[in-house]
Length: 255
Image (cartoon, rainbow, N blue to C red; front, side):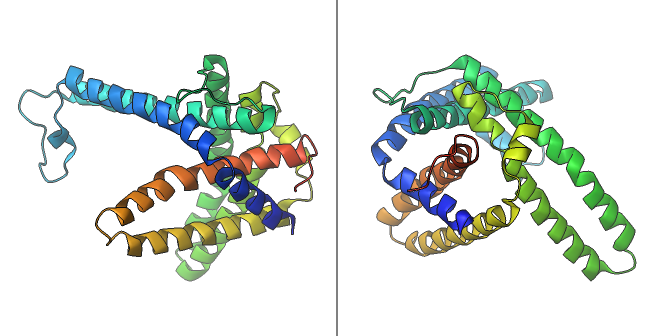
């Protein structure tokens, strides 16, 4: 029941604050778009360089310039994503309302968020090693069994990821939580988080199926698909982390 409540509360937060969602996302997305255009112009790398059909770089384009462009794009997308996530966490947990279309750019919190995300990725990478070892050991004798075991292990890792994920909103609001504290605070909640993950997966699958069908409508379908696929669904995922912090760290009641 708790897993369902966390998911429903996260969805309600997004749809109940659509004005703030737009305020928090539009400005950063606008700046990111402008920076991406600038990166392409400055690097001199045409878009054709990323088309698989070409097979080689366009004349006058060096591998170094492409590498720098890719690095720049990755940095812009990462900073923009974390800017939006930090702003949303702070809006929900600290009631820090955005003003205008540009939420406050808190570089220290964004940097802390980036560090925690890297730490989370490192923990998951290390934790995934037994799964790869299991796959290597079993795949030769029983490929089907190997797939089942690896799938079960990946589900286990996803639950672990969400148990650790509390460190992200904690970093956003400046109240650091260690991975061990996050793990201990979610003790006994593994089954609830598994239910939440299943519900979230089915919800996103349903939304994607619906708007794949609606995409055949010339304009409205495309706009709705972009709105939900690029804006609403990612914000629901961020809201799940926010809700978990509120429930497991601040002991907030779900209403």
